[in-house]
Image (cartoon, rainbow, N blue to C red; front, side, top):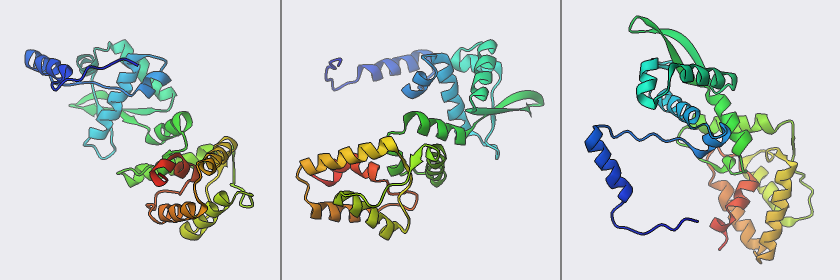
Length: 244
């Protein structure tokens, strides 16, 4: 790990302020590391998609589309028209964006929009570590989409949690889940079931009392928002929040 010297004044911030004054532009462009990984290190494509995501959120149109000319993309990201066309075609083939030709200032112009459902599917498929079910988002639509997408993707390769397991910790969680939430636990993959069993064994090794488990499980399930499906895996992943 790289050692970082502590300083009361951030050198990075000073550099950014200097650049802002010198160039008159304070814009800072960022892209998630996950995009770079998925696009195999193609920084330009990753930044292009990040900006489409950014501007889709800023659109004032009812349909959510926004437009940018080749000149605007070149000014914003230093992309050539060829790169814009190439990345647009690739992102459309991957299902991550959709485009339409609409008039802008009376000139036919490409309008862009993120395919949110496909993006949610992509996130769940490539990066879900079992914690998305415990995620509370500001947008109810976003939370619902994650839950629905997760269900669609895992349906074929998933199993129902068996209720007749020997472990009392496991059995109590499932029974409380059904009692409090009024439904069976969501389907999970066999790999997730293995992780759940390993996590419970670790809890038992840490001398977690069964009574403490019962209390924390009940408190957890009764405090969940409606959009949360009460995944036992998410609960176990965050066990140190509940058991000191």
